[in-house]
Length: 119
Image (cartoon, rainbow, N blue to C red):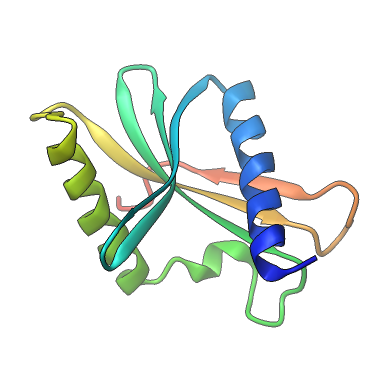
C-alpha cells in the first residue's frame, strides 16, 4: 500500500468515526494553493475543519505530534479561504484533529479526536 493509499484509508476511517460521533461530512481534500484541509464537516451548527494523520509507526512520533505551530497556521489560512468561499460570515468554526494510529494493532487502529486544536 502506498503512502497516499494509507492516508486515504486513514481518512476513510476518520470519516466513519466522525459520522458515528454526529459530524456531517461536507467535503474531503479541499485544496487551495499552499494548503489543504483533509475533511470539512459540521458538528451541530459549527463548521469544522479536520486534519487527519495516519501512522503505521512512531518513527516520527505519534499522530498528534504532527500538529506543529506552522501546520496549524497553514490550516487556519486554508480554513479562512473556505469560510469566505461559502460566505460563512461571523458564524463559529473550529479546527479539529483526528489521529489514526495502527502501531499497536494493524487490524484495529486507535482513533483519537481532539476538538478545537487552536485553543
